Length: 626
Image (spheres, rainbow, N blue to C red):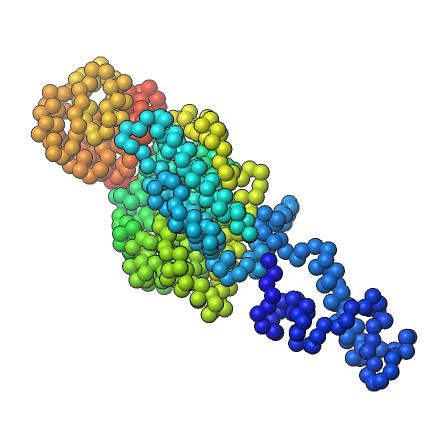
């Protein structure tokens, strides 16, 4: 809504209609503006007499006022709420968003830059307060919002998913009930693979590294599309995916199989295809973690990781995917809490660095879209600033547009009060917040207004019928098969390994799905739970086997397997998750990598071992296997 100016001398046209504007009281109404004139001295002016300069100026002013009156009477100068903003083909969405935000109060503009999470499955009264009283820009779904018991039934999984959809509906209803009717961005992390925050009946997928092994952009597109369709049915309109970190530290347990691999160009191309799939499903894609989290094993949830790479290296490696994605029009990018001390940012986290977010991302790369922080309550941000409140200020000031927090601070606490006070004190910061709010509103206009937008109030019937998506299961099964990779084959002819050539088989691993898939391939195989504390039992059973098929998922498993090297048995490794742990195991007879512990990946791995499928995957990492 238009706000009456608080003081004279501003640029608002409303000053022309104030009763005590600087030029004096308003001139009286006249039905004949063209002949209105005021003489310089007593007596009426002749009807057709030439106007004095004063008269001409006054007449021109009245003409302007008349035009403004006509304009105000015939149509509103701006939409009074989000719902009334009309979009036509060819419209400049950013311009429309800017015009809308320009008329918001400081409080309403600031609120659009905030996104908070909540605890548990049902709606949070405290988060509802933030929505109802402040009108925050978004909410974030975390894994703890879809809790499941151990060994859940199909009905329990379905009910968990339905409860989430109902909760999202409650939040959106509260947002739409406010005078401005601005819907919420509802975000989550549904990356595929090991990161799946929306549990329940949503699809299990092989994940990004499997896509890297497949190498097909079409597969990346379809993964984004099917994941997007499922979460969109729940009312989720923003996904913090794809992860485009380049896995330079191959042993990174934080990123690992969340990366497409160690090739930055492939990460950019596959990430762009994945994002297009999400976009076509109606969901805002968010590439992360800018400028790159793949060269450290440290987790920014607990510490501030530092990557000792200079800018030349970053331009050749970490920043390559973002250059590709910016050119392809990615809607959003997440900034990461990582420091790069050999750059101009020094020890400041990239998420709080104007150098990275404004100078590099905006000015050098030319990115125009939305920038959202990683969780601002993480130690990687708060250790650097001393408080969440200060971290939020520095994040906005540096160039982020949306501040995301896993929790929600006090309604009238330091985060809100300090940011609002700074907006009122500092014109540059006020402008920065409104710029950020404009990008948030522009994203909402682009993705939440059309007929294909995710529903604000999810249809429970469609959830029961449409999740998992009808085409998802067969696609993910095919993807798992295409990703299976023969990494090592000591001698020609090791593969295919059949029950006849294998002899007595021992299945050793830490996963029940591995045993289940292995028994389908080798029905007479024995099995043992392989863990360091059971090493003696493992070795005892290994002595009586002809072939050991070992499920490798981490460094502890590699150490345990090495204890069997001297037994002289045929050893085949099925690597799940990160294949980097195959380094140092060049002595084994053969190895197949499948990149996830998803059931279909185990089946694909054994199918590759036995020759039922041709292993087409290519190793997406450079490993020392000699």
